[in-house]
Length: 287
Image (cartoon, rainbow, N blue to C red; front, side, top):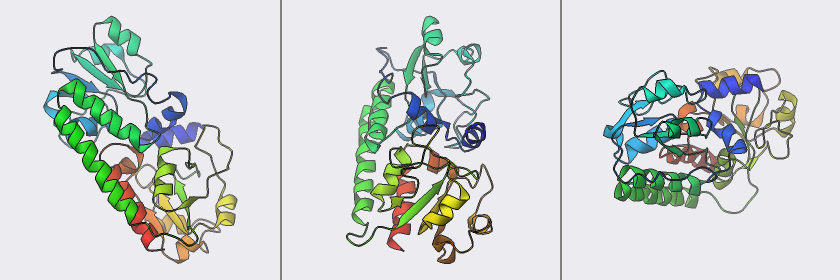
């Protein structure tokens, strides 16, 4: 499991594991500050993308070391996984957005407002978090518009999924040790929405929703499509995947249906989730 966590850190996927530990909405309360925050620190790559997408980027003074989009985000060496309260407080923030509540109490003791936005498990969570950030940052109109636009785009994409017939199968790879995501996860729900059956369903998982498959299990499942979310963290590609022992005869390999994803887009539940679903639906229409 340690290897998984290391790989997910490289791909900014650790937030997905937190979904199994922190129920969405359990700590995602909206700060009660009446004034618009002018010094925001984001320790979540997804929250960073959301903040800039709703027009609150000028209020952001620092983001964590995994927040690499958009490029103008003020990236620092702050960590969202092992947050340092003293380092965070050094930016004199009036709002800190975090993916879990591990330092919430300490920051609030310093008089700093905290918004906890756990990893989403469904699309509704994404829309909800965008709207929460809109209310807190006083960009509610643009946040509502963004959520509505995402919802409409996703509905359009879903409508493109072929009806009827046998659903093709897919394997979604989180790292090159065969950790995947089943249909109980945000990623798994996107695969299902995109028209695929998930070969990871039913597999035993150390972290709920994220089973580690074996190469033999993947060969036996013989997926019709493969989605690689480890192109950056683990330097994987259609070529490296097909070169693995026994994989050269997989249907996805022989039919050229191994899709290399951008790890960052594939690991976050912000505005760019539309791009991820677009790739999934595109692959589905080619089956």
